[in-house]
Image (cartoon, rainbow, N blue to C red; front, side):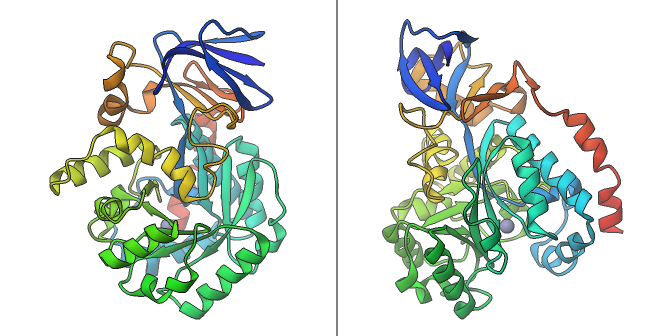
Length: 380
Ligand SMILES: [Zn+2]
């Protein structure tokens, strides 16, 4: 049992958070436990939920700054398959540890390079909570996983073949799993109207019509916007504001670090800037909800994570640099100005994975060195 003592608990004020058995059991003042984490001067917030990431691309970080999406799909993505088993393992592990370092405690990862068992093993070794998206023909191998890493069905999406997607969704439903899929064309969601439900999760959706976004929102299906990648690679204007206006609660994802940083701060900020530029006067603090509770909801995990609530799993971030603010300004201030260097301490399922700015179980520099030759090989 441990207590996070004297921090500014987001939405509560100065309080203590007691964690026992991986679960938040009490939030209040004057609480005690055998192990004490001093949070005075820090903000205590739920871990970030990144609902769309291709972690295997961690080894290729920064290689796609000028890469349009069509060239990426036709040219770069297929070459990922040249990665060896050990390279896939090292890349996914690096990506997951970079995520943890940035306070991302849950990620929905697409395991699409080589044997998915390799990425699954790397996710498990990292200590992150993950929904591991696996193609339908392989998903039975992971469907009963019940630890921190559990399975989802990855379907490329109805822009490829409606019949295929319908089959994938039926398979996922028979296994009780989420289906996650990329979607960017117009009309594809309308065609799927009868299949929609809260166990479907779509990514991008830049070209969906307002009516299609209303269908998604009404059905409780999730939509993840990846504002940095969509802006840089030419997907179109991110659908964040339009999905909100349609009654939905957009989630946020990093997608690929070939041209986005590995943290949710940049995603929140990009969405804020794009929406404000487009005339949407949304509150900055709302992006913090997108990056946590709405993310959890978009992938069906809001019953167990996404907020600091008694009974939920203890995925918690302690953030430096905002202890000086009145409480009503903290959440917006984090969205507008926080960065990875402010992430002091991170807990996943009640276990400390980053303490006082240092990763506990992994050496980031060594993980980066281990993939030092992968980019040049894959991109050659
Ligand atoms: Zn993607």
